[in-house]
Each structure stands twice: as C-alpha cells, then as structure tokens.
Image (cartoon, rainbow, N blue to C red; front, side, top):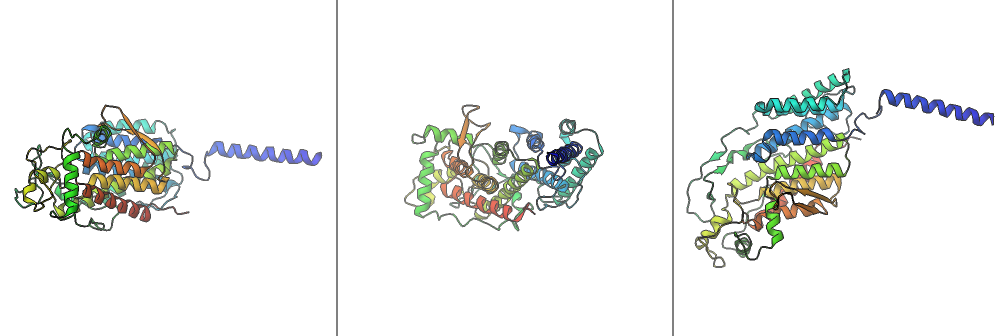
Length: 426
C-alpha cells in the first residue's frame, strides 16, 4: 500500500509539472503543430479582395500575387519550426509568434504589390495581430514575416510581369491563325509567356504536343462537337452542362483557391500544413499560366468562333462553315491551344490530390454560378478538374483537344512542383 501511495504521488507531481510546462508554452515541441489555419485562409481572401475581388480582370497578375503571398507565408511559418524545405527564405526564429509571422508576411507582400490598397491591408493586419497578445514573441513574429516577404519580393523583382496587357493582333487570312473574337479587339498580355516561372525549370518544359492538323479527322471531330454543343442556345447541350459552363467560367486561380480553402477546412489542416498546401497550389497555378501562355503563342491557334465562321478555308471536307455562329459564353482574348483554364484546374487538382488524397469530397459555389448562389459537389479533385475542363467546350470557347492538352499540362506542372518544392524534411 505504501508503495502504491508513493507511485500515485510521483505521478501526480509529474502531471502537475507537465501542466505547468504546457501553461507556459502551449506547444513546447512544435509551436505551430496545433494552431488552426485561420490566418492562412483569411489572407488568401484578403489577397483576393485586395486585388479587386469579383471585379478584377488581370487574372495572370492575380496568380502571381497569390503565389508570392502564400510562399512568403509558408517560409515565415516554416522558419518558426521547420517541417518542410523552404522556398527561398532561410531565416529561423523558434521564438517568433507564428500567427504574427504569417500575417505580417502576407501583408508585406500585398502592400508592396498593391500600394493603393494600403489602408485596407493595414486594417486586415491589425485584425490579425489583435488576436496575438503583446509580447516579445509577437514582435519577433512581425519581423520574421517581413523578412520572409522581402526574400520573396526580391526574388520576383523584374520578373517580366509589368507590361501593357492589351496587344493588337494583326489581321490574317491564314487558316488556323488566331484572330480576335468580338467583343475584344486585342490579345491579352502576350508578354506573359516570358514571366519568370515559380517552380518550373523553364517556361516550355512541358510544352503541349501540336494540336491536330486542320484537315484531320481529329480536328473535324472536335470542331463539330463544339459547333453543336457550344453554340448559343444549343439544342443538344443539357441543362447541367449549361449550368457548369457558367459555374466554372470565373478565373481559375480564384475558383481553385476557393477549392483549397474548402479542403483545408474540411481536412482540419493546421497552420503550417495549410500554408504549404496553398503555396504549392498557387505556385502551380501561376506556372500553368506562364507555361500555357508560352504554348498558346507558339501554336497561335484560332478559337472555335473564328474556325466555325471560316471553315470553308480549313481544307477539311468534314467541317461546314456557319457565318452566324456565336458561342454560349464570351471567348477570352487569347489563343485556343492549350486551354489554360483546364491547365490551371488540373495543376491545382493534382497538388490537392497529392497532398490530401484525390478521393476528397467537397462542395463549393462560384460568383458566376447560375442561379446565383447555387453549389456543385464533387467526390474528388480530379472529377472537379475534368468538369472544369469540359465546361470550356460546353461554353463554346475551346476545342476538346485544347482542354485535354491543358489537363495534361496542368498534371505535369502540379506533379513537378510537389516533387521538387516544400518537401517534408523529417
């Protein structure tokens, strides 16, 4: 009995010491492990709203901004308690507050890139920092975040992203050559193919194989499909196909960040896990735009609108012209092949599947959904990526082969970045 009493006393004292230790430092082994992902999700939305929200038009610049923000947040958080390889920042401070570091990193990048939105961004930072008690750890976190942000900003200095996005397109009567599609009279940001990549070795590392020849059966098959199912008021496009062609019409980088937010919440990722996920997703989205723009410029293929109206010139007796043909949705002002919308979707889906597992169910909405506020549910990321790609055919703005090439390009980019960046170090 005396022995049992002594053992009980030792256990009680030990437990008390553990409780005291934990009260002084909640997570002595890993101060980030059990922190919720709120600050990452918040600043993902702050970046979206800061750039203009549903009203912004420069989707390429938005993808660059998102990648910078999330890479800075990842490196700042990883510097507190390293779990993954860093992207570029090599600083370390185990005594820094993680939330202060993450918020300060995002804020510093955004203020640098969006100086006209400083007031909005300062207010968002104040809200984030108000949740952190005043302490030396908080001050160190703020400094760490700023340092991580400056490393990312310096890496993207003079990266080729500045330029006039409205470029004229010479009129051409060469079959297959890209021509503008009303209501647009320009090609959007053709210089973007020369923007510095985030994770790829070079912009044409995974350039898509050439599209089918205009006089081929494969071309005719894709031509006739989009002609029939993608026309305004199509008699064969189903109500569901019309619904998802509108649902996915928003910019890919916005939609797939929303998917990532939903997944991070559903999977209950901790702060650093969420930061890594978003960093990989957004660098892959940004790379997909750059690589996609390179391939588009290389092949310079006309859009269905031009192809269908000028089919008499394509040398293919399996196609027939319709001079009055109109697509179900407006055609973006850039070449057809490959579909970067499809590439971005599958780049993000590939990262999400690699990190979280493909068979992850989720439900999301979209600002372009009709009716407004309606949702769509998926059983996997790959299912969503395929529907996202198919939507461009149903909308009448891409050939099927352009969407398939985009899916392949996105898959290669997503896998490359997961295989080569932010890898677990223990």
